[in-house]
Amino acid sequence: MKYLALIYAAPGAGPDYGTPEFGPYMDGYRKATETYQRDGVMLAGEALQDTSTATTVRVRNGKTETMDGPFAETKEQLGGFYMFECANLDDAIKYAAMIPSAEHGSVEVRPIMEIE
Amino acid sequence: MASDLSERQQSAREAIEALARADTGRLLGALVRDTRDFQLAEDCLQEALESALVHWARNGLPTAPAGWVLQTARRKAIDRFRRARNFSRKAKEYGLLIELDRETVESDESPAIPDERLRLIFTCCHPALDAKTRVALTLRTLCGLTTREISRAFLDREEAMAQRLVRARHKITRAGIGFEIPEPEHWAERLNSVLSVIYLTFNEGYSATAGPGPLRHDLCLEAIRTGRLMLELVPGDPECEGLLALMLLNHSRAAARVGDQGEMIALDSQDRSLWNRDEITEGCTLLDQALKRARPGLFQLQAAVSALHAQAPSHTETGWSEIVLLYEAMHRLSSNPVYLLNRAVALSYAAGADAALIALTELEAELSGYQPFHAAKADFQRRLDRPEAARISYQRAVDLSNNESEKAFLHGRMVSLGAQD
Image (cartoon, rainbow over all chains, first blue to last red; front, side):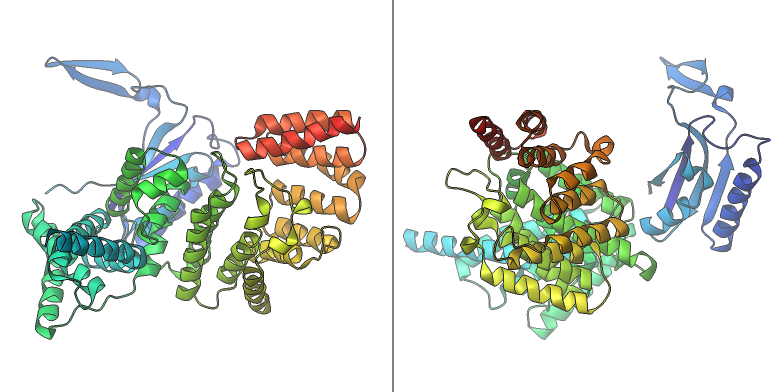
């Protein structure tokens, strides 16, 4: 089954760039990604630019409307994702738990819907 | 003739109810294994039971009723697969069902029912489901309780409970919660989740956090039955033994715990001759067996406390110092202020209420919203002859309680305080 692991964290909750904690934090991501590739479960994985760079698109009455920023202001924001191919939810949870941001934010694991 | 038919209908209905109670776990386990779809398995089983009512009322019971139901349910599943839009995705399961049906027809015997209840209970108690859902799903799936019975036990609307169960079954299939015995690396955690669900069911019946009465025997008995099943499936596991011992030992006091008016009676005022000796003997035997395995756990330690109460000739002649040590051991295994609160209560009998009151002050910050904390504090203050302070603590405990008989009990203690003034 395919699973999307959505990585949420409050801005500023993780280590900032330039602090001594930042290096080990990024190292954690590198190690996690290596593990996923070694175990053959990783289909994709990316980090996103800050929500201040986001544009929200809506189509109303055939007209495209755009808005600056994310649709709703929530404390925890989507910062990145991985897509895994796993046998079952237990495995997906095991790999999601290796994502360093899980230690200060949260990771939502959602199965990908299969459409014929 | 008509009365003959209604008589046969009645006996068919009774046979089906008994079968649902005894065999739902086995039947659903087999069907989930075959179809890999929890909701589909449930729907096919229900259809097969409805079909049984028609056929058995007409022809009498088959020689192997459970096998008849399994075969019928498998055929219902075959039908559903054939009609399904996404047939290709289920081709493997469809092939298996056709094969199983062919074998049964050729051997001219009812199919044997494989025992998949262990996989089933691990699935129902998966940590990705919320705690209440785990309990409800286990009662429905393993114990064969009807949705109405479960909704009554939880004081929920039947409709809401049905929806909760349907959502849970869909989540199991769609989120890919495996129909598997957990891997060794997850075994301890997942087993603990199962045992906790069983104990939660027991406590829901024993303490009845909501509703008019302090005890709901049906839930207690279901929990004990599931505990027995679990021990049958995982023989020799010390925590399984510990949990069953704990439930039996606590339940042994059920009759002495509630008075004629439905009021709750505290341990120190219970008529010990009402305690169920058979349950105490069985509980103590199981606990001894578990402790010999030298792999202590929380359920064994709690059972040990309950056993000390069960074996004590009176409240004062109870092994209170040992109980203090047992709660300390629990806190070391799993840090929890409630263990320390219970330790303080035991300490009040082992060393005196003043020592216990001092022990409580360290817990105030964490437990100030917890009813038993204030009830314990009130009791210590009462015994130290501080009625004014005790009155305030009792009032706080009453305000925090949701259970009528518990409120009445606390209120009674508060009033008797006034009588001594």
